[in-house]
Amino acid sequence: GIQVEQSPPDLILQEGANSTLRCNFSDSVNNLQWFHQNPWGQLINLFYIPSGTKQNGRLSATTVATERYSLLYISSSQTTDSGVYFCAVNTGFQKLVFGTGTRLLVSP
Amino acid sequence: DTEVTQTPKHLVMGMTNKKSLKCEQHMGHRAMYWYKQKAKKPPELMFVYSYEKLSINESVPSRFSPECPNSSLLNLHLHALQPEDSALYLCASSHVEGTQYFGPGTRLTVL
Image (cartoon, rainbow over all chains, first blue to last red; front, side, top):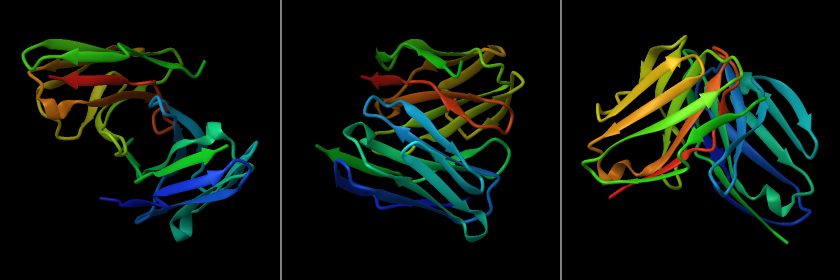
């Protein structure tokens, strides 16, 4: 099956810093989603981005489908950005495969 | 409304108990999903219902029994679970092949 790897696995930032999270996938995908999982376990949709670039406030994402990777940019990080960030890919047939995750801690 | 609700939030059960997890959405989605997430791991797909019919079962043991009584509701019936089944159980819904929206999860502990 498809492999979805995220880097870095762990990231510690000072409040106000910027960061880039990466998601590599091993095969063609129909779509890609980015999620933030908060400390209580809730998965929050960030982006649905099979290709191209999207922005939402301090967050933006870029997917280069032909090169099989996606990037999530977080600017001016805040303590509420802490949690685990997952990318997830869909290769068809409604099966969403999650990446390995990046655990982010933003300290004040 | 982009909300998926799940009950209960927490559940503790013995290995001989029978319990059920419930999931509800009112977004008009016709696909609903169960995922299992162990600590410090990504969610893993268990079941997919499409138009109220089971379309994917990821080789889940029969002690987990899904049910989709109508297009808004999804249940997961639990029987004779093992301690290793302790996990966060997440429900999601979507338009068929669309963005998946997740509920807050049920944190299950099997004693």
